[in-house]
Length: 160
Image 1 (cartoon, helix red, strand yellow):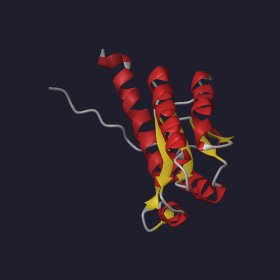
Image 2 (cartoon, rainbow, N blue to C red):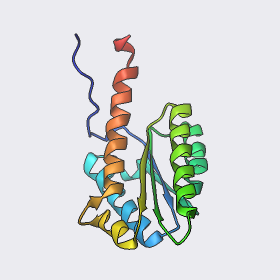
Image 3 (cartoon, helix red, strand yellow):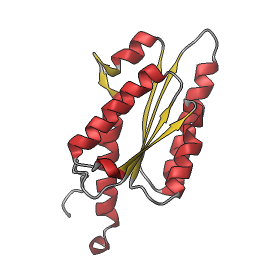
Image 4 (tube, rainbow, N blue to C red):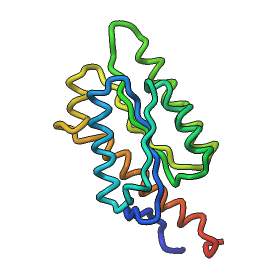
């Protein structure tokens, strides 16, 4: 049995795109700041990170698809915030974002990490965007770097 493959958190040589939803921007901007901070900590050069703003979480898949098809990125970080309201609209938005981003990731064979909060209240969203429950934007960025490195290892010619 060979050595187990693990993606590291070193970001040198990686190019990352962050797609972020403008809806609930008071939360998504906090997620973005967490993601950008994590990418800096991993050593991803600032000029190798692009940020694309989508109107809402439901729109993230089409933005992610365009970024993936550009062929310029090793991973995509997708950030948004869906807060439950008086109707079931939030369920459809969250489901559309989730299934769309999974589809983009699989079709492009590219890490597309899910930093879309789906909460019941604004307070829960605040707690997950730099509050008591950490910053899920940071978590999504760290996962993107780790996955990009893992896929590089798997795809390396010397492994075949």
